[in-house]
Length: 82
Image 1 (cartoon, one colour):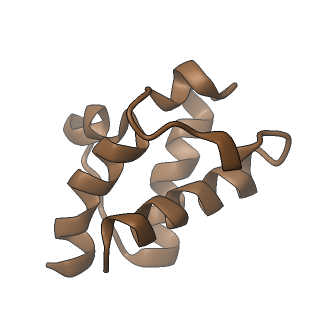
Image 2: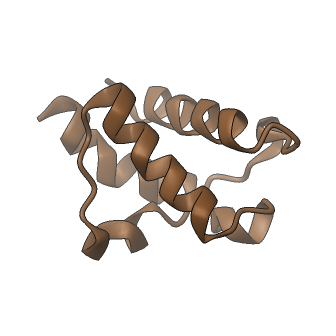
């Protein structure tokens, strides 16, 4: 799986949990919380959807790795391809 595919997966999860957000304009290197109206529960929903739909476990100590789309892709590529 490529980093771009992973970014698309993350965007689709965000679109599901925050349907009012426009995910088409998300900047890759800016923290998601700075661009979108996501609270801590929304963030947990992202983590839960990764686990439920893709069997990806993200320990709480690694949540900081999911700050932006780029950091999500960098962190998750090993989990998708590992």
